Amino acid sequence: MRHRYHRQYRYTLTRPPRALLRAKFDNIAIIPASMLASKEGLKEQVKKLPRGEVFLCHTKENTKQRQVLERVKEVFRHFGYAVTLLPMEQVV
Image 1 (cartoon, one colour):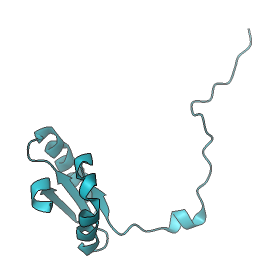
Image 2 (cartoon, rainbow, N blue to C red; image 1 turned 90 degrees about the vertical axis):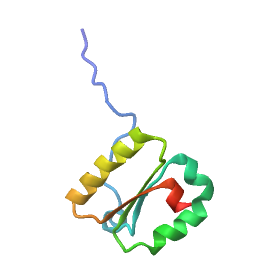
Image 3 (cartoon, one colour; image 1 turned 120 degrees about the vertical axis):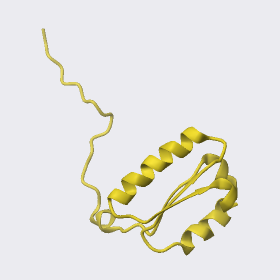
Image 4 (cartoon, rainbow, N blue to C red; image 1 turned 90 degrees about the horizontal axis):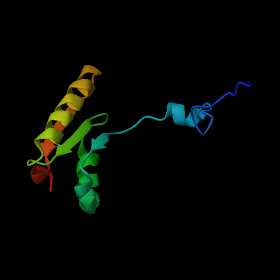
């Protein structure tokens, strides 16, 4: 019986370009998909935040989403990021 080597991934992973490794992100924004319609206004608000800040947004009705984002907030704070967590109604 022959043994076949099965790759786990369809694509082989290579080293990313050096420019990508050196890139620094200004801000990180995690928002619900329902806010993508008002993306331009949101983009302006996120650009006003200090460099390196994380912006998290949730809907008031979805308590599960809020709980998950609060956990994400704890993780980012553990790594030293400043985090802003706001309900969607305050942002728009």
